[in-house]
Length: 165
Image (cartoon, rainbow, N blue to C red; front, side, top):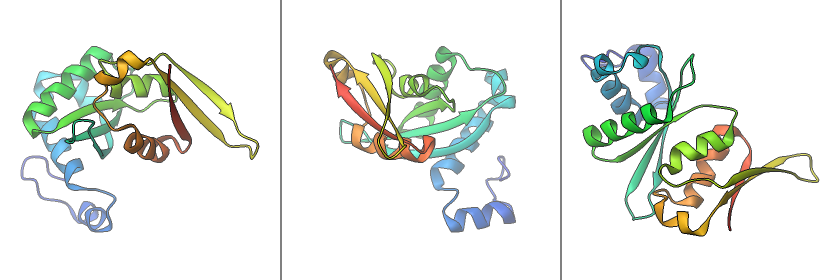
């Protein structure tokens, strides 16, 4: 996509029609391009996909999955999330793709804290992640946990469940 004009190239147009790219993806990449001069880290940032989930307050939250050659600072991701939220008008959480499930969940739950993550090996050989959250942190989580469970299945290709302690 041409970030300046907003016109999709032929390949991206086909991805858009097939559903691989959605309106949120286009809107986020355009806004990331517009603020690139403020954050040098954005030059090497790779936008992967966005997911729209229900917020716990009845609104919506966009989870923007990105990657970068160097690990990104949580403060940077939080500042970027806030700036995109202000530009788009919907809560945005920028999450760095990682094999570390706790890191990814923590970036979505920010400012709430994740107590721990356990891996459960199921009899059929599959894996399920158990995300432990203290009950006092629940009110600080802005995303609907059931919707987040669905999205994480798409991202990490494993099941997750939440345990409140």
